[in-house]
View 1 (cartoon, rainbow, N blue to C red):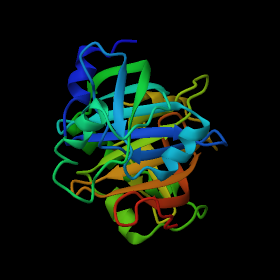
View 2: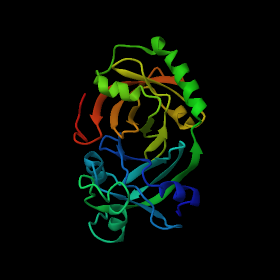
View 3: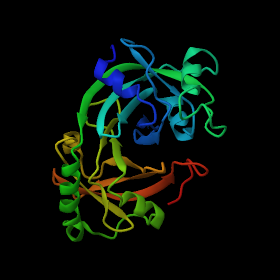
View 4: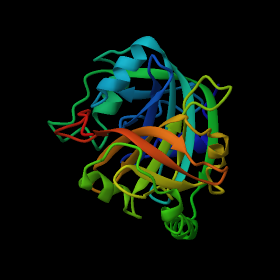
Length: 266
């Protein structure tokens, strides 16, 4: 499948938010901020990425090559590309060189990639935009349901993590296995808001109607990426979902930024 021009332009942008979801042996997704995701040439049927701060993703890719990705620019335009990792990591050659010389990796001794690989494209979601007014509206509506959705289940996350998810000027995405699909779904969920230290509330909006297919009890992974950039991943289960509003009961949390990238923190 050839990468559409609109997605080629989006995924070619340097220094924007790019995420990858992989599938573990239990069929659950793991989310990672993978800034090295890039395009190769126009009309290519694959995208490229570099191995950097993705230990859990690497572990999953050994067992399951199916990958979901999402890119979002500063104007909150986002699109998705899913495909199959070709298990072709290499530490030399044109793919490795292109990623090594992009703006994020070129001048920083601490952000060198180890290998580069390719993902053959099988599915795409054309770019659409998250409206900034919609974010404000969604957040107010979600906050208004905090008491109704509050509960005692879940594990406590650190206050630092809660504060990041509380930010309005941060990118928040969720990944899950949609019913009848083989690839992870990743969509923005900018309305995600901490109810307490154990759960997050969210709302389905016009830009992420894929969430309507979520089921209570379903496993999800969510990630917040701030302007710093600092990233955290939280995993949990959907609860009290009525098709529009619901919550995620937290089961575990991870740092996704150096120096503790990949460390479990709750």
